[in-house]
Image (cartoon, rainbow, N blue to C red):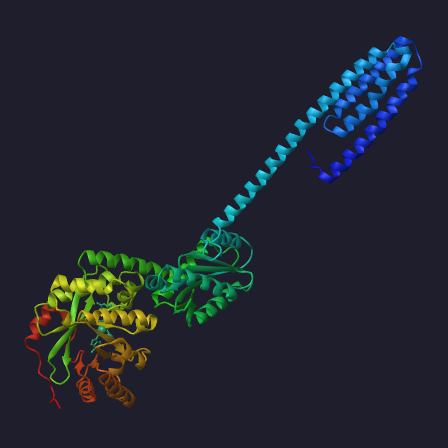
Length: 568
Ligand code: C2E
Ligand code: CA
Ligand code: CA
């Protein structure tokens, strides 16, 4: 049925009412004129059919009350009057019948009209309810697609958008932004600060997203942006770069300055290349690569990354099984006192000699374990094993490497203390080696861990000094007991005047800041000599001892070689 607009319906009803009035008047007039013809029988026939026609018309107009009443008034009332006086009152009975029928009809019309009005009102109410239901369901579906904290699209809406865009004949590109260090902010300052930071970041990202792109929060600390069009990839890469730039400076959350990083994976697809789910997976693979490389940066997906990811997954399984089956071993490399060459300490170094697929070095599996979340059990295995094996050697300290990932763990100090307590290893003989990466990542947390460890008597050494960018200024802030000069510097001192100057400077500074200096990677007598003269207190390297299993160390350590040169 065709819907008629209310205004049109009203106009048509007005016309109908006027027409009804006009036709009723004409019809009545015609009836009166006709009445003067014919005999009594014919007249009563005319009167009967007139009355019947009027009654029929009035009933037809029941739902148009004014028209029905007008027809009743024009078509019935005059006849009542007419029949009352016509034929010297002989037709009065007709007038009475007409009057009774007329009154009955008017009463019916009025009652019908009330029913009809109620029907319309209830229909109206129903329509209003229906509209409200629609509005609520719209609101529901909007909320189901929206992230309540930021007002951005949520994961579901993003995937729907991604699927729709990847079905179009356009290039699609997306970036997967995973925040680095957000969990720590939540842990340190509470969820309110975390939430505020997320909102601030959402605004910062929205301000940098390409105009037609869709930005979404697809997880607690994950954002994603997708764009389509001929330069979608360039736009998304531009977005990723500006986001990285912005994240280099801190954000203000209330009164607080907080820093957060991001690992961003970018993936692009030509029309028909892949669907939305696959594009998201590719961006995730690229993002994972950034994490594996030490976080904070941008990586673009390429199929080689898939192969790498597969190898990484296999390696993670191997490590997990390897730990359970006892495939790992700890080797120890002695650290000697520079003047006497006497062993003062050993560095525990992880080995994987019983790996079924063949042994690989820690340089190959430690970074993978860090990225895959397995460095913690590995690190604690080394710590426990070293503490167990050396608890009986009263005068030898043990150096254990600690990954920056472990340092980030809020429970780290407690776990170290627990292992010391379980193994009975004296904390004063434990020294943890940490590289600078973490210091730059989260200076506050690093300083707090070092202070907590010092409080229980454990020393912390800065490893690989000179290989990165550690600022001298940092050194004094953290409370390191010692620094280890990186092998890359040691290997140059014999022929590189600048390396010698550097070592002299490092020793001078470190000693001035109450830190001892160990030089690692000493392979020749000449290097040992130069380092000793430069003032390094401790030396470590193949020239003295190679990393070896406990059993070999025990056999050899009893007959240590004497220094091959006179000590100044
Ligand atoms: P690192 O902490 O710098 O350890 C010193 C590395 O230098 C060891 O390699 C050691 O074997 C090697 N080295 C020692 N003296 C010499 C020398 O005179 N010449 C040369 N060319 N190399 C020397 P390794 O055992 O392969 O370990 C490599 C890295 O793997 C370590 O570097 C450390 O960063 C990591 N690593 C080893 N074990 C562990 C561990 O238990 N936990 C953690 N987190 N990292 C570990
Ligand atoms: Ca080390
Ligand atoms: Ca080192």
